[in-house]
Image (cartoon, rainbow, N blue to C red; front, side, top):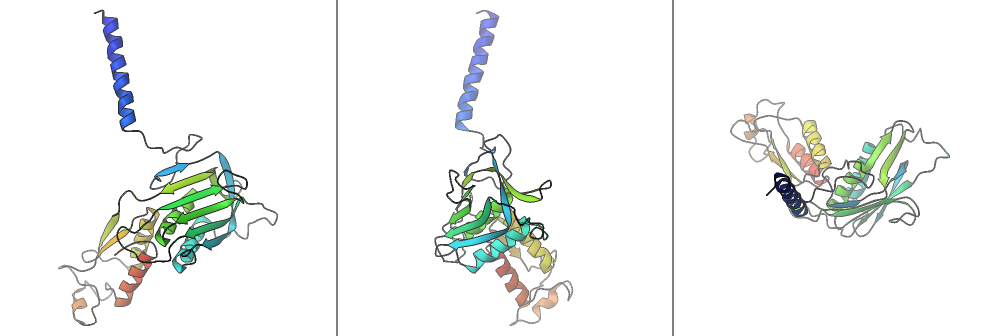
Length: 270
C-alpha cells in the first residue's frame, strides 16, 4: 500500500473515532448564543440565551405567587440578593426618567411546606426577557419552583446574571432572553467546619454559610465538639463547656440555634 494512502486511511480512522467519542461525551454547553462564556456557578442543567442586554431597576420589586411565594424565607432571600446586586447608592443615582426592562421579579412557589431534608426538591426555572420577548409577555423576570428552597437557588442564579456596568452605572442582564431549567446533580453537597479543633467566631461561620449558598451547597456539617475542646453550652451539664480553649471561645445555646436558623434560611441542613 502506498505510504500516502496509508496516511490518509489512518487520519480518516482518527477523525471517525474522534467524532464518535464526541457524540458519546459531548462538551458541556457553557457558552451563550453569542459565543461568550456563561458565568453561572454551578453551570445550570439546561439553558438558552440570546443577544440582548436588559437594564434592571434598582427598585426591583418582588411579586410573590403560589402557595409558597409569600413565605418569609422567600421575602428575606429576595432582600438579601437585592442588597448583593445593587450598590447602596443605586436608588439615589436612578434617573427619574429612566426606563428599565426588568422592574419586577415574579417568584412562583408551588408548595408552602418549609420542611428541609436531604433530597428536598431544589429545582427551579428562570425566564428573563424584555417586553414582547419570546419568554415574556410584559417583560421582567420569573422564577418558578416547587419549594421555597428551589426558589432560593433560583434567586442565587438570578443574582449571578446581574452585572454592574461601570459606564452606565446600571445593573444589566446580558445575553437575554434567558431560559434556565436547573436542579442539583447531587443530593448531598456539603462542607464540614471543625470548630472543636479550630474555634471560629459566629460571624466567621456566617460568612462560610453565605459562601456555601453562593455555590448552592446544601449541607453544613458542624463538628462542634471533640477531645480537643468542648465549646458548646449544654444547660443540663453546665461544666462541659469548661473544656473549651478559653471562655471567649465558646458557643451558647442561643449561638447554636441562631447558626442552625441562619443556615436553614439559605437552604442548608445541619
